[in-house]
Image (cartoon, rainbow, N blue to C red):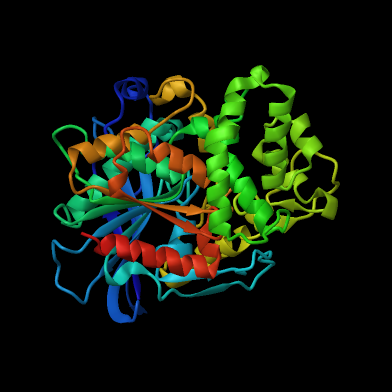
Length: 499
């Protein structure tokens, strides 16, 4: 049974002085009461039957003058059949983009309902899609809050706020940190163990949040972060002239993709052993060759080219023509070109067909259009039919508008160049002895490759003794592969229970 609670307006957001000054004379339309929908439910998770409350709705953020600036939409799950305890953790969960709503982790991993798509990297087709109970949810051991940042889901700027005030690494982190503070106050959970979980750019957000949450005397100390498909240092993923880091970052994932599609010799090898072999080559001969550049002799160049071709399944001539540097988008088009297919970016297990086969890059990501219809239908169906949400405006699944503002670094609180938030993780560890990290990686992720993540976490002042790396035979959203989903949830549960 659902009910709407009218009139809930929560205070808070501290806007940067330059933004506040810009807004002094702005005339804003009256702000209606925040919409919040509550319901009582029951389910069985990890074999435990329990009752829980759902709270789906808006939290209003305010500036220093008390004016509303944003409505953050979230869905909270609170177990109700146990006495409130300081020992019960709460997870704050979001996706990435930037510009993506939290539906992927909500209906893919953590939530009490799950969208089911083909586990074998086949297209999801058309409705009806399967939305079913998720017995793997961690609701038996932790409460959860799914957050849609401004410009995603049903979240938006209101009153004296504008969307661009919240877009950019620092502005985004400040708004989500304020939402978390308000949630802890309203729900009286200040002394509960607290965890973050983000995917893709959501990992960037989680790392940036460490500075906002743990910095200064008003310290919200976190117990840990679950990073899913991480990108913290953007130098690892930006193919730009003079930056060889992405070629090093992506090579082991290209090799894994070639392995999956039968383009390398598997005789006498296992996938893990093959990847470890490629790691050694990439850190050694390959990285050295890229650094040497024109100082390589013809024989040295040819020797490295042969190994790159052998590991990636590309032709030797193609690798030579690329000057040993094959970017991920061209690789996805080239690997299966002779079969008439392209591979996926988010998950290179997926294959698709383009309009024609001579281009440099694919027409669309088959691992994106292979799942998006099911998740979009799933979130609308679930919010409106199960949780009683009565909001007619568009639910922004993945909007490009916020991302365009992230590209204005001087206005968004970070220096020009390649943003790197990884040092915040190292600092958080130095200032909080209980802070731990789980890093989940898909072998077939050509968006945020696992080797880039490994290199990032083995630098930047991070104590890897408090980092757990896990790997899955799937891609960026490893949970669309059911064996990987089961392993991921087990790994998260083990992480939560570890001392």
